[in-house]
Image (cartoon, rainbow, N blue to C red; front, top):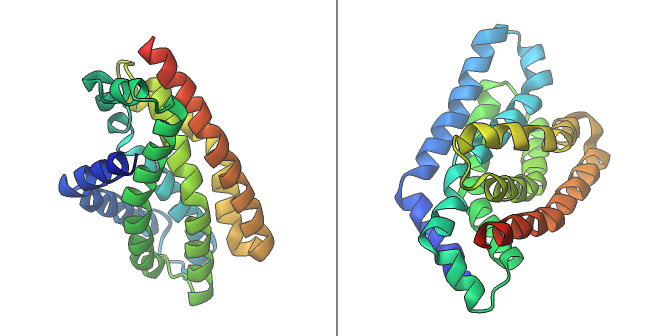
Length: 211
């Protein structure tokens, strides 16, 4: 399973996925100030929500490549034949997805915070929130990828499936700027629930696809 994780990580970084993610994330952060104007107070107040919305969309970027290619090529089938459960495979996919999108996202947040005029204290809260919340986003993205694998136009369908389920993460993530430690605790609890439940849902979807 470790080999599966590192294979996905190498494939993502080798294919320029991190560059695409950072570019997309910073594009959102750059365009938003143009949309609402140069009001520094307003930007600082809504900046956390903007960063979290961009993080959610960034987690969705590679969703069509998380599960479907390995299902179609028979990689997951071989892993299951060798005794790996679909839920374990899904958990490995979650770990690989988190390793590929969370570190570049945290780096890009440093630049986005400057564009959105966030203070040092706000930046630390946003970074702490992303560190706690991105595992939940990764788990949700893998579950969505498994549920939509093989569906025509999976990217659009994945957005419809994942976005409503990610609302609690967005609310608690953006709320860390005003909620402080309490907001971080709620965010961590929500992320943990997703981290436990999403691989089980993804494993069930993978098992159904293999039958």
